[in-house]
Length: 158
Image 1 (spheres, rainbow, N blue to C red):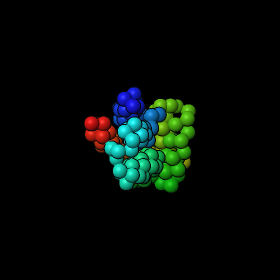
Image 2 (cartoon, rainbow, N blue to C red; image 1 turned 90 degrees about the vertical axis):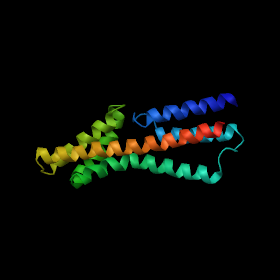
Image 3 (tube, rainbow, N blue to C red; image 1 turned 60 degrees about the horizontal axis):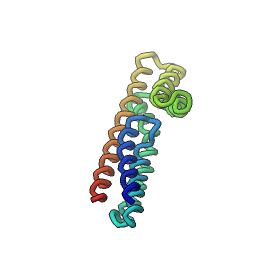
């Protein structure tokens, strides 16, 4: 069981890195670490309510990872074409230019969408800045969540 506990701890630490690098799913790995620790310790360290809450937060953060950058673009004046461009660019970039394609694709997508919508360069760049701000917000949320899980993991190990 010690091997499982160490493996789970490594997953929790990798999850922190995954909050910044888009090709490593940070919150899901953090949650998986909790499940591994729970299994290794006969489901004693955490209540089922705690694990269900953490699962819900993991799903929420994973969803927000795709929604908040587009919402940031909207907040900074993106049109519907810019929003769709951001989402489309994010998905295309994720597959074409890993690991940073998600960010690059979202910014490029919103810029293209805004230019197609007839906005001038400065307004299109402002919407692109919104994508960057949205990404930073999501990274902060994911880091906070994974840090809290790491805290509970270490506490549950002892």
